[in-house]
Structures are given as C-alpha cells and as structure tokens.
Amino acid sequence: MFIEANDPSHQSWVKVPQGSDFTIQNLPFGIFRHKGKPPVVGVAIGDHVLNLHALHTEGFLNDFDLTDSIVESNSLNNLIKLGKHKVRALRNEISKLLREGNITLQSRRDLYEKFLFEKTAIELLLPVAPGDYTDFYSSLSHATNVGKMFRPDNPLLPNWKHMPIGYHGRSSSIIVSGQNFHRPKGQINTKEGEAPIYSETKQLDFELEMAFITFDGKPLGQSITTAEADEYIFGMVIFNDWSARDIQRWEYVPLGPFLGKNFASSISPWVVTLDALEPFRKKGEPQVPEVLDYLKFEGDKHIDINLEVYIQPDGGEENIVSRSNYANMYWNMNQQLAHQTVNGCNIREGDIYASGTISGDAADSFGSMLELTWRGERPLKLKDGTERKFIHDNDHVIMKAWCEKNGVRVGFGDVHGKVLPAI
Image 1 (cartoon, helix red, strand yellow):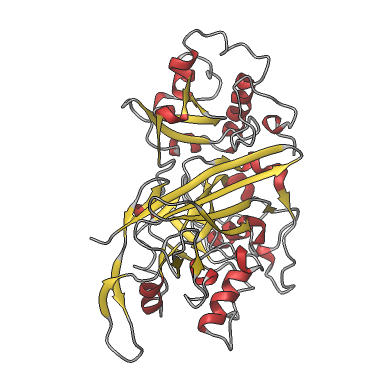
Image 2 (cartoon, rainbow, N blue to C red):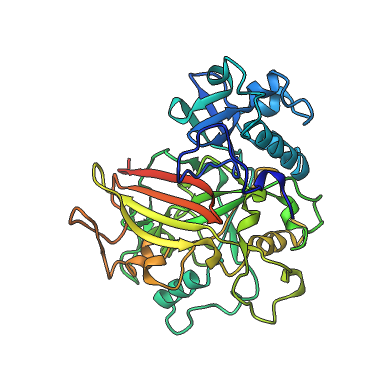
C-alpha cells in the first residue's frame, strides 16, 4: 500500500537532527500545552512541534472536517473519531506543508510564534483519554520464562498457543511519560502457609511493552476480523506496565492481576500512526496449525520496532539493561483485536491495547526485571556498583523505541518515570 507521507525521498524544510525519531516520514500526533494556554493537538517534526490548532484557525486545514473541539482539546479522541481515511489525508497534508520546497508556512513571519514551537518550550500531556484498556500476554519467551519460574513442570499453559491471553486493566491510572508515582502497597504473602502482611511492594518491576490505540469499532455484537483490524488501529505508543510482583503473586489466583498492576502504567506522549509503521512490517514466527480460523491472517502483520530499557539511579548514569524487538511477539495486533471482539465486544476511539511484556530469546533481551534477574537470583550490577533485583525508590526507568530501514527512521521518543517512596 502506497501512503504519500511515507515516501522515503521526502525532506523537510524544518531542521531534523541526524538520528531524530521524528522525521517527516513519521509525523506522530500528541497533545501539548504552550505557556499556560489550553491544550491543543500537535505533530512532532525534528525538535519542534507543529500547532494544528493554529493551522486550523488560519485556514490551512479547511478540507478535513476539523472543528475547534477537535484541535483544541485535552485528548486526541475527537481527532481519532474522524476515522482512518480522514486522519490519513490529514497526515498527508501536514507532510506537504512541511516538505522541502513548500513555502506556504515558511513565508509566515510569525512562523515560530504561532505554528512551530521548540519541544523544550512546551508541556506534553496524555495523548488520549482511554475509556478501556486491555493488557495481553503475547510474547512466547516471556510466557515461557515466567512459567519456568512458577510452574517448571508445565511452563506454558495449554491454551496459550490457541488464543491471545489478556485481561481488562485499569484505564484511570494510565499516566504520561515523565509523571512520577509512589511505590504501591498491598497484601504480600511472605511465607507459604502463613497469613499475608500489608506492606509496600518489595518487588517493583517494569514491563517493556508496546500498545495500540483504536478508532471507533463496530456496533456491540459485531466482531472485527484479522483482515479488517488495520482499519480500526490508529497508532502505537511505548507502554511500561509497572508491576508489583509480590502483590501480584498473592492475588492473581483465581481471577488474575488486580492491585499488583493497577497503580500506574506509563505511555509515551506521541502516537505514531499505523500508517507511518507500514514500511517496517515483517513476518512473525510460525504458529500452531490448530489455530482457529478467526485468528488466521494473511500478509506481514508483525512490525520491526527496536526496543531498549535503561535504569538510571537517582543522580546517576543511565544503564542499559535490555535490548529487544516488538517483532518478538507471538500474537500480532490483528489477532489481538480479532480475539478482543470475537464475542461481540465493542471498541471505542482512544481505547488502549498493550502487547504484554516483550522478551526475546537472549537473556539480555528480556523485558522485565523478573526475567533479567530470574526472580532476583541473578542481580544486575549497575555502573555505580549498586545491584538491582527489582526497582529501587528514586530509580528512573526509561524505554525507547524506533524503526529504521533504508535510511528512514520512525521513532516513538521515550517513556520514562521515577519511582517515589511509598506514602
């Protein structure tokens, strides 16, 4: 599929530094605030943010059914409601305005006062208002690793290769990158056979994930097929599914994650459209032949996204602890969305669907501290000489994600957050 904005030959008149995630082939959407003014929709280009509210007000985007409530808003939800084809046309038009040789915006004397702001001068906000959030469990390596720790005789449960396992999470505690949170508390069973205690978690963990965000779906009762799924996916963000492993371990039987997961989940502020990710599609690993028909698909549905995780102690240096890739997933987005809706479940604009922890086969590609330290048995040594079994107070965890092919880079920036002491 040819998408005009993806053309690798395009260059922008806006300076894009070498190695920037935000090339003209990307143009992700987000919400920002400038100098205390109301939040508006923006598009990232290099080290700048393009103000879509100003473009709309000045009449540059008259052909796209935009209203003030769409471009001056505290979320992208109203923009997403326009649907796939209108958002695609809007991104193509923004690409034209930013393209080398187009003087439409360049000729404006008030360019940098009204239309383009430096990223250092703006505040990035949560990009969507998610009504619902599903977290999947779709990395074979991660599921197998966790199974080996807790069920060595039966590491992978019988249903795992037959459907994308998931649970309904807490959307209200999804936070934007840079928002810190306090260490959670809850019930912990310190010794088998004894009563639990109430305590702050001693095993705070990150989970390296990606998430997709949906357009409005079909009416309640209708399902979305794997062939249709792309039409209902707006874009993707980096997702850190913070987890309290000791709280989770005590509570997860029989109904699954609860307090061990719902205290905070961090997402990156820029939503990279699925259109921008099209050039980076690839084949996934073969699946069991018994997979049911509604989960079968055609074409390349995995995406080659490079991933890195860093731990930065308070006031210290960044330490890279994991390098992985989103293509390591067993179940892809199309299958996840098809499974989510096969029973007639409806989806809405701005809903978030996290991939589940992304782990590769190599030990340095695992996507959680639980795996990287193997339940704390193999602590990680940081540059300052300290060790980590799990995440300490005031540790800063940073995740980065990007695609690169044929000289074109499309990235997500990062998602970061600091763990504050319990209160």
